[in-house]
Structure formats: structure tokens, C-alpha cells
Image (cartoon, rainbow, N blue to C red; front, side, top):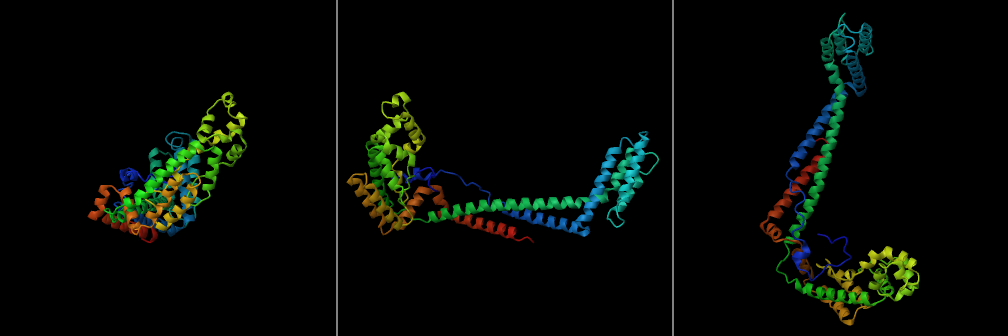
Length: 406
């Protein structure tokens, strides 16, 4: 709905409203933004419940104690994996002896009151024989299951915390999408309530007439005045609040002020910028300096136009703003344009002083931004219903996100 960021200022007030609005523009960016709010809220609540359960499970024995159990389980698993081939069957007797000693030490190194210690003792019993087989190792692993479950409480708490983080992130993202959708629906409902039968041409005609006149006058000025004179005008205009020219590069103005080419008009200056050094030598005194000072700013020079001097369509929301803009434009345009164009600028007061300015301006916005289908959505109440539903979903997600105990 906003103005193109690359545009210098005004839009063509003479354009057809449908063309200016881009009324076939972007579809709803997230049509399902409301409908899965319930699922997201449920996922977040479930994730928080899982985290609470996991935290309580860790607190039952304490993180430090469970870390000790986890380290012992990992130690036992490494021994079972390392010696399963060498210490079984008719394997290496030395490996068999080492394994039994190291595996028995796992349980012996644990304090008597460490939870799960009996699982290590049962695992040790499973591999405490004169001859071991792979099935003995399997029985040892199975005997360690209660201790492994205790150790897994730490991993489960970490996974549960990650699940909460992911669920909260998803809710936050959906809230952002809902905020965008709500803003778009609020704008749609607001514009849809405009009086689409209002005579917007009463504002459009003086603005369009001025815009056309100032574009023609600026084209003449750009073509006929010296580039130095043109940039001096732009530099002065850039300092005024309602004319958003970018100030000319100081090094470019300085060069033109001191160059024999300072009498060249802007189109000629741009043409010179394409010349070879040998050809340019016929037109400027120092081709190298000309190239270094002018060519880097070619894009700036090519884009100089009347657009910062035009009035947007639809016009400013406030009639007072248009009045200030009109006074400024009269003063600025008079510096280069013929009296007929200045008179068109003065006539902008007809639009600014219109008794129904706000109503007509709102109707112009609606004409520019709404398609027939959107007008129908507002008229039928569909848009208002979508807005109410989106607000409900946002409230649900906001409450769920803020309620850590939900």
C-alpha cells in the first residue's frame, strides 16, 4: 500500500485508479494464519508440561547425582563395546581379565546411596563367569536399563527445554504473521467503509493539471538550462521540507562551477560522459578530470526529474499538509517554470480548501487500493468477520505465550 521506495516523490495523478493501485497485487501472505492457532497453543502447552515433568524428574535425585549415573553408564557401555569380541568365547584371556576388573570397578566406584547402583551390580553379575558369550554382554546391557533411564532424565530435560523454545518461537512467528494480517484487514475494513460514490475528481483534477504542467516545465528546464544552473536549483529545493530531492554531490557542483563545460545543458553533459578521451578533448579542457567528476554521478544526473515537485495521488491525509506543500511548491516552481505552471500550483488550494477534503481523499484511497472483490468482502461483512477471528486467535496465542503455567 505504500509508495515505491525507489520513486522520488509523487505518483501520476492522471493515472487510472486501477493501474495506480496494483489492485491485483499480492494475495493474502498467510491465509492459514488464524486457523492453526489452536494447534500451536496446544503444542506450546504440551511442551511446557513435558518440560515441567522432565525438570521434576531431574530434581528428584539432583542434577549432580544423575550426571554421576550418566558417566557410569557411559563408562560401562564403552567397556561392553570394547571387549565384546576379545573377552568372549575363546578370545584373549588377558582381555577377559582386564574387562572383568574394569567392569566390576564401575559399580565399586559408585557410592552405596547412588540411585541405580544395583543395576550396575546386576550387570556385573551377568558378566562374572569363567567364560563369557555375547549373550552375557546383552544381559549386562539389559541389566543397566534402570540406570540408563535415570541418566536419560538429563537428556530428556534438555530435549523438553528445546521443545519449549521451538514452540514459543513458532507462536511468536505466527503472532507476527497475525499482526500483519490484522493490520491488512483493519486497513481493508477502514477503506471499504469509504464513500465510493464521492466525486474524487474534484481533488484529482487540480492535482493532475498541476502535475502535468510541472513535468512539462521541468523537462524544458532540464533540456535548456545549463547543468550548473539546474543543480543549483536542485540544491536549493533539496533544503525544503516538501520537496525531497537528494542534494547534488558537492564535488560535482564544484567541478561544474569551475569548468569551461559549465554552460552545457544536462543532456549534453550526459552525452559527453559517453565520449572517448580523444573526442571529449574537443568539448572540455581537462577530459580526465571531467570523467572522474561526472561519470561516477551519471545515475544521479539521469534520475533528476520533476517527481519531487509533484503531488501524490491520493493526496496527503491532512488538508493542512497539502496547504503547506502548495505554498512551498509555488515558491520553488516559480524559480524555473513559466507563470502558467505557477498558476497551476496556486490552484492546488482549491483541493486543499475543499470542504469535503477528508471524505474525498478517503474515497480516492479506496479507489486506488481496493479491488471489486475486496469491496464486496467488506460490504458482505466477510472482512469484518475475518478480522474478529484473527484478533481472537492473536489473543489466544498471546495469552498462551505469556502464561508460563498454562
